[in-house]
Image (cartoon, rainbow, N blue to C red; front, side, top):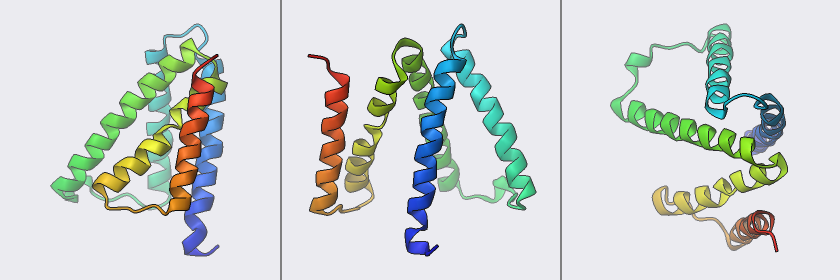
Length: 144
């Protein structure tokens, strides 16, 4: 697998696992408060990822990281936590087949934020795809 295409395979796996997350979560939150369900999910992630990092020999002293790294990883963690709380609440209240696509509106927002803050410049073709995703979200989100 070439490094130039490696990102695609990891992203496709991420999409597959995200889809499984929605289905498993929708089944798992029945009869459970969505915030408690999010806490349980987070605890599982901490344990599994900790074991993976240690087993793979990737452990490093986190105190050696720069302040900027800590700041932005902390902000990312806070955004992730807020996203998960909102996602689980939405799954508790709505259909997984409607919640997950609306959640993927994040793709449109990532493109806009990357344009504004990271100086990324998607091509016209890529903007067209992003626009189609936005249109699809709107079609799914609003009933006639």
